[in-house]
Length: 292
Length: 270
Image (spheres, rainbow over the protein chains, first blue to last red):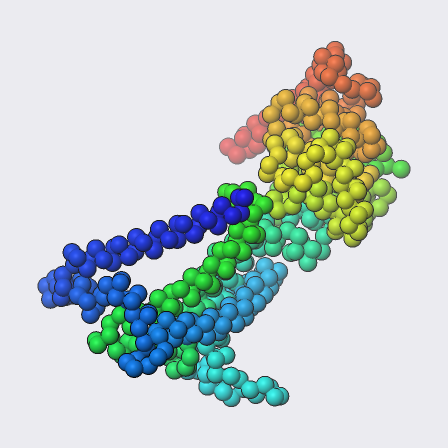
């Protein structure tokens, strides 16, 4: 079927792209300078030696060896459980980001004054460095008590994911909601349709081609936010924590940190993959060229 | 009872500003039940504006409009008219039959009733086998027929059309004109039809309303004496050409007037 074929095509392209990245990496290790390329004393080319750039095979085989010498826990299991932990935080962050982003987009589409007042602040919010924000969110969260609700530490990491996720979603959805053709809006008016009816029967369906790429950005943004928050707040259990722990061992065991980095990358791909699958599903009955 | 009554309607855009446009000035028009009336005129004569005033998509600057003895805003709320535009404007994400059901959904009809009516409308426009396809899988003429089916789905007594066949090729266009007359005859629908084409206006209409620009107004109304029954032979009949000539002369008059008005303005500018 068409649906299955598109999924298969996308998967094939993904595998091809992975192999090309591996090929480029290994090629550079062959032709690149072992101690880095210097140009008038300034380092411009990365070092191609095994400490800075381990072989792909070394990195992959590292997964099947124990995390620390003498431990019976293999590193793949540690990375996997770290990724699973961070995935759950990212999903919470993405879900909140979607709710807030779509909510803001609807408000901005409905009231021009909200759009003009709010949009500059949304843009500004994205220029605040996440690392500066992370400890603040943790300390605010720690002070928050609503009845019996106590702010869990992991929620701070999710909130930072939300912070990165909501912006592309809000902007993309707003763009999509305003993309309904004027004639279609006029048609709905001629039926005396309410704003809500126009929103659900026209604006949202018309917005889907714009929302999907925005949601993809939002999904990977949620992962980045969670991982950075784990690193800067020292939250245990996730892939971010593994990255800083393993990075400390980079001189003795250079392949180790890459195992965690790939875990984080895979996490982002899994999140974006969810969105891509929903894209194929949502757009299955649309003309091909309307997919952006 | 008249289907449409326009009394002294004017529409001025950007009133009091430098870009003020007198789109329509003091327009009076009565359309009777079951009548087919075309609005024709050069670009900027306000024919689309007049249609939108009747549809209550625009508010008149002055004057009043009635549809079926109701105010136009009440008529819009009651879905007393259906509308079709140059672009069929079907929703890509809905099947043909769901597109036709759209106005019924908005009216709160239940599912079975909607499906039954959509099937009935598809029979009317002779496309029953396309119910479950998507609009983009259909040709332009078929899409426009679906748009007409959608406009008539709630059985409104009045159909407002803004150059619905403007984007179609000549062959399809003539076929669609015949189909439109048949459909409106079967459903006893009153039609107000905006067009650029003189033969189209004459072939379809009981009356052709000729309009002129700057300011937009009605300059003449021509009764088309081709009788009630029209078919492909009508296009070759003497009466058809006589009526076309009458409309063409009425339109020339507006242009001559327009040209002389420009000449006078040119003199003043100097």
